Structures are given as C-alpha cells and as structure tokens.
Image (cartoon, rainbow, N blue to C red; front, side):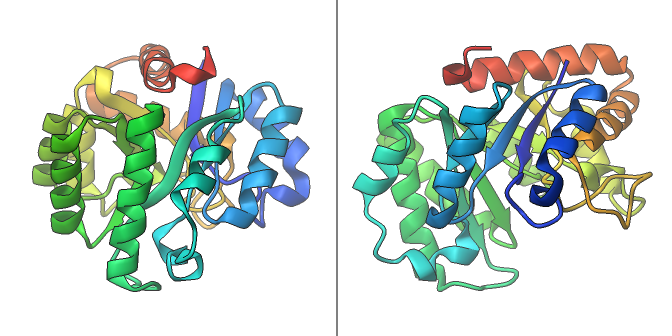
Length: 258
C-alpha cells in the first residue's frame, strides 16, 4: 500500500472530480490520503471529505502565503479544530520568503503558534519552507528546546545540510514529484540517503506532477510514479519502499490508527 502524505483534494483541478481522483489513486495502490488545508475557510471542507471517505484524513492549518489574512486567528481556534477525530495533523504552516505573499514577521508568529498547538496535542506539524531555511531551522531549534513535537518538512527541496539538521532535530522528510525532475540532482542525492524510517512520499497535488506526467494536473495516483523513482534511487524494490513509508506514516500520524 502507498500513502499520499500531502494532497489538496479541495483545490481546483481535483475537487471537480474528487470521486474519480480518489478512485484512480486507489486503483494505483494508494490506500490512504492526507488532505491538507491552507486557510481557515478550508477546514470544514477537508474534515467533511475525511468524514465521507474512510481512507482520507484531514490536516488543519494556515499556509504562510495566507498569514496576513489570518493575523487575528487565535490559538484556541486552531486547537479546537484539531479535536475532530478525522484531523490527524496540523498545517501546512511555515515560512515562504520566495513569494513573500505575507509579512515575514506574521509568518513567523503564526508558525510558532502552530508549533505550540502541535506540542500540546502531539499531532504532527506539516512544514512548508521555501528560501527560508535559516529562519525555519532557528525557529524549530528554539521551539524544540522548549518541548518536543512531531513534525515533517513537506515537499522537501532544501539543501542537504538543512536536511541533516532537521533530521537531527527528529523531523521526517517528505518527498514530492520534484525529485523526478531532470534538474533535481541535489534533491535526488538527498532522497537516496534519508534514513528509511524518516521518509514519506507525497504528491502535493494538484501541483508538481512527476515524470512522466509533467504538464498535467497532478493527482494522488501519481505518488506511485514518485515511489518507483525513489526506490530506484535507493536501490530497493518499490513494494519495499511502499511498505516502509506506510509504516512511517502510521508511526508519525498515530491518530490515524493505521
């Protein structure tokens, strides 16, 4: 069984044919999905899908792009949203200095708030970081020193040095279809060496379709292509990688009960 550890089933490109998207993924061997929210207005949607579909789970959080629009979001609202039995994670959250769609200080404040809730609930924190490695690591290290919390770097594209540092903090690394791209040699080197028990696979669909689907809307089914590519990089069988990453998901996202 494969698990797509990060998809956006409520986004344009997937939501219009959500039932078909899920059916195609199941036919490709995907047995579970983590449906990610990026703004508060999506929380009810991801939960409703998770209630309707037994193999879909939900995560609640605010993407750094949306930080300015959620300056008044209180910790209590996020904490309350995590109480739903189908919500198994917090995020995605983090820092994005590439687009700078939101004030960096606001991004950092909301990131820390998400961490605080993750620490209290012990639900895994799903972290987005782009062109913000130094601040992301500084915040993670500072907050871990205040009390540990489970977390992962989603759609990992950062440096090997950053990867080593977050692994040392206890985080998991999740790889998307970007690893299949021709110009992703450095990322492929990281993918080949991540400890087997700290690795997850995702699509980040509807974005970032892997080879051989470049240029199409990405679907959760394509996690199978990414898994096969990573297995080849690591010199293992795709089935073995699928089993290992499924075990990793179950151990990290314990509320899922897999």
